[in-house]
Length: 460
Image (cartoon, rainbow, N blue to C red; front, side, top):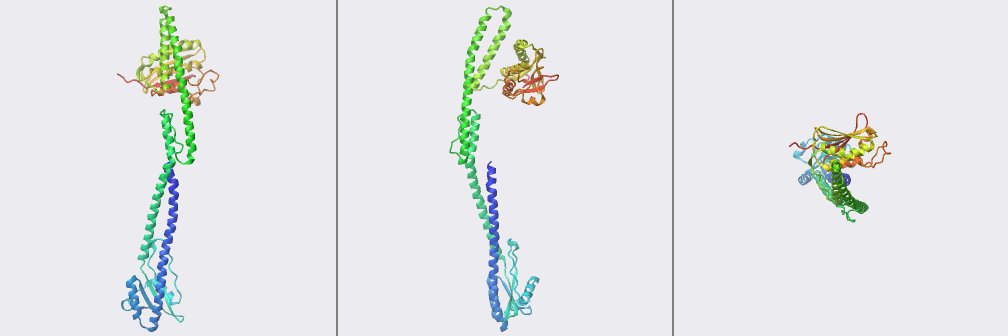
């Protein structure tokens, strides 16, 4: 965003400076050249008067002296030609001077009684070349000669270059000042945005007290800051209520669960040994519920424990969960079938894997019609380990498979069946904490195939 602010402010500034600088450079160049030509015109007018007197008197001594002193002072060569166009002064060596074609044409124009136009000003210094001015000498309306003045353009050219260098320095300073101003403005404008980012990161880390000062940045952003603070306050209130609910629920559920386990122990004392397996399975379910409530309580307190990465035999885990769900499935006329072939070891959290598998089996039993079967399998693959639950229910069309793990999403085909649309979403969230995932596929022959993909344990 800072780069965009630089572009928005500096590009127009550079364009304005280029426009104004170009106009100033052009005006300065024209001014220097016009001043130079004006001085030449004034000086050549003075020499026209002196040359007329010299030509009429036939003596060039006084004029020769003036021309030599002028050349010594200003480096400008002045030549007087007579009516025939031949150099007449200065005397001696200057009489042999050869004029170029352009100057000769100007001399012929002047001897015909017409004054030449001043050279057109040029923009670039290197285009400003030496040019001769020629002025006719009149006596009572007749042309008796002409004065040729050839001045060096080194001085005015250097002045133009100096003006341009000064303009470039001023432009660089102006851009530098503009850069500093834009940098300060960007910091002032972006400060509340950065603080919003910091506050959002703090909220993401669990610091619900993160807020932004209302006087930060320009007035136009104060409303955004006010709305953010309100939103953060609402989020804090909602999260606090959720934590309180989870704390209360997990705490209140422990009491009836403990009472239920005590009742199981009491009932077990009056049963013969043929019930030992069912009693132990009930105890294990109670202990599992206790572990889930402890995890829920830790989540609600904000002390989320790191998932364990033990070596878990997915075959044994699948056997236990199938045994636990067999009666519930049989009550709906559904048979659970376990397909395993030896141990399948995974490096994962056993409670999370069990909970995810329970959520998937619950979905399969819920949506499968009576008289069908649900197949549960555990297998090792080249990419890890898989727990697969395959049902023979209505399944999902291909375009709905991607939504199967979304929270509260339900297919239009099964909305008549009671449910919340959370089963696969919960399984996905649980497995994500142990670097695992869920894959939902359409099974051959109808139904749905849900695969829990878990990391494999390293061989010992």
